[in-house]
Length: 99
Image 1: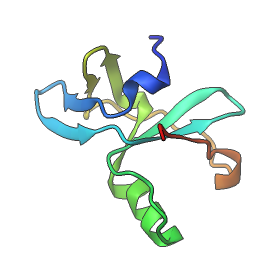
Image 2 (image 1 turned 90 degrees about the vertical axis):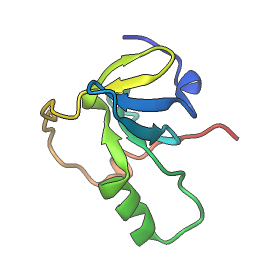
Image 3 (image 1 turned 45 degrees about the vertical axis):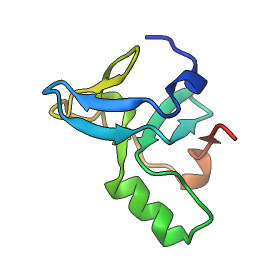
Image 4 (image 1 turned 60 degrees about the vertical axis):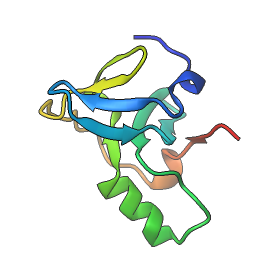
């Protein structure tokens, strides 16, 4: 599946069970591997590090769960997430955002 990341900003996200999840706000990209890692349901603002951690834990979706992207982002919430070795956050963060 190939799509420009800029097209995904603000897209509605639904599950395969037709449940509305939210809108795509920010993206976490693994620049070393060149892959999208997470989609956040809330924008990163100038907040504390703790707030950002909470957004990543509770208000984001692993991109592995994405089934399709066209007019909406479709996710399978029951799909198991592929585990990858944990690396320091500084090696993973690459925030893309339309300004």
